Length: 425
View (cartoon, one colour):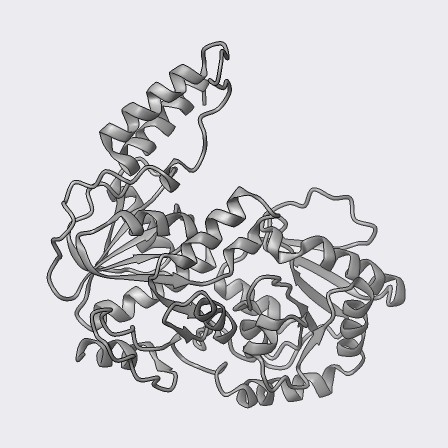
């Protein structure tokens, strides 16, 4: 792709996201920035994160709202293997079953060239939803509810006035994605926008309440039609590790260092790495690269191993539950979000201090007692009481912000039951 093509593509994406007026202003700023620096003017790239100070120019005026049951959901760009988007689209399936009309709007840069291409990709790689995908947010029609799904999209929702309710679908503590920086501060600021929050896990919901938000939690859940125990045939020396180095919060290097220690102690151990097509490191141990796998392939991988390693440093992850559902003992990090997700622990999930030696200890223990661990895996899920679910568990969507009384705290239930109850309020 030539430089001119890249610039044109970025310009079209910015136009769809911010509108003509903001695009013209940004082009003018870019032109000025390209001139020699004099006085207070600066050279180089355009100042990023313009959405933080310049409101999005929406077509529809504030003060209007769409019909009951209409939802505008603002999402970042998506590909075919995003767990966060999968949770969003899974909830949408339940919303549509309850009679809601959902429209997705991609905020920011995207590799899609048309609304129809993005919609087809969603239906092919995730679920065959009725919902459509639109590139950009300036054309968002009035709706009853407008939802954010990441810190960047929260700024777009903040500026949208043609709705009755604003909801923040919080799946992770995003300020922790960055070192101390402008990004971490901008991300944290969105938790002070006053949106109603629906959060992945109890720990995250508590964090949102600390910012003064009304927050409820839902539990991540696996699909039992895919993730289920096998025949019991597995390799007693095989360890699988979700090594997605592109996602820094996955702590890939921490896991690889732990596996290097494990291989020193147990040279017969077979290490299988999955979640990425390639690693940028020369590893000091033999391993099998499995690449990026589909759900059925993942389940088969889990059923054939003796232990799984999953690292998630900012919130708990769905990966351990899918491993456990396949009868695979899991080692995870002993961190507050994970402890909150697994309050009862269990013999088949071991929480290790995030240190290479401690992680290697936990993996060695799992490999030393494989029969005991596998026998206790199903009991671990049962002990949790929240892991073995057929559908994603969600709380009721909070009642409209105009209500003076807080919504009742209902016990966790299935998506379908929650959405049906929500529809009656």
